Each structure stands twice: as structure tokens, then as C-alpha cells.
Amino acid sequence: MDPSALNSPELQNLLAQEKEKAMISEMISKLTSSCWDKCITGSPGSKFSSSEANCLTNCAQRYMDMSLVIMKRLHQ
Amino acid sequence: MDSFSSPSSGSSPKFSTDDIMSQLRTQLEQAYAEEFLETVRGKCFDKCITKPGSSLSGSESSCISRCVDRYIEATGIIGKALFNQR
Image (spheres, rainbow over the protein chains, first blue to last red):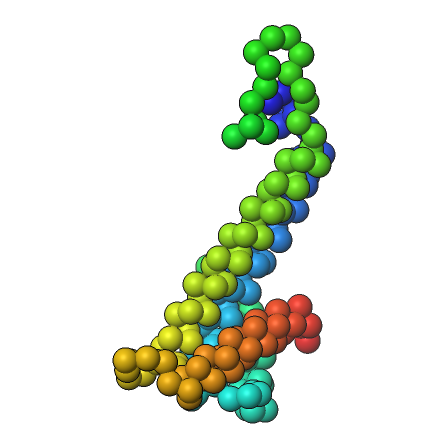
């Protein structure tokens, strides 16, 4: 393989995009796992109850809120 | 791996950016699929197989089916919630 191909700005750019996508994917994966544990307490049904569905949505959004709180705290 | 070998003499074939990115995306997708599978197995085992018997009962099997469907649905809900911010 020609090593100079690795230095192209185009490739670096594409890699940066993929890295961003991978980080988002990981976040969704981890959050789904945590929020499932918090919100789906009983046996899985054939659909989510509205309280389960709301809990999942709230869970993700509260996570984002928490993230902001943490960053503000760390910048004080 | 064949695709990474290059002739030892003068002109080595240039590996295109497209090829690299294409392989990367394929491998990422495989990794995600494996990770997802592992997670779903863990969650549904915990939820549905509470008292392991000598075989999977009908109710355990249906629980597992529902569990997989719900987990996929949960993944979608979380994804949407993250990107439909207030």
C-alpha cells in the first residue's frame, strides 16, 4: 500500500466524520442500555406503555441536561 | 490479507480513499452488529429467563421475541430523543 495515501486531507476528513458518527453510535448504544434498565422494569410487552415510552424519551433528554450541568460544574 | 499486499518492485498500486473508507464502514457495521447482539442477549436473558428449566418454555420464547422487538424500538426512541432536542 502506498503510505502517502494515508496523509490525504480528504481521507483525514472522512475519517473524522466516521469518528464522529461512531461516537454518536456509541452514545446511543450506552444510553439505550442504561435507559432500558431504568424504564423497562417488568416483562417486555408487545408494545411499550406510554409511561415506558415517555420514560425512555425523558431518560435521554435528562442525560443531555445532566451533561451540561457537569460541564458547567467543571468550568467553574 | 491479499488486498494489503503490494508488489515489491517499483510501482505499488495506490489504495484509493474509497477503498479504505468502504472497508472501514463495513468493519464498523460488523462491530456495531456484534455489540448490539451481545447487548440484546444480555438484556433479554435477564428479563426472560428467570428460572432456567430443562428447555425454553413457550412463554420464555415469546418473552424473548417481544424483548428483541422492544429493545430495537427503545434504540429508535433514544436516537430520536437525542436529536429532537427542545
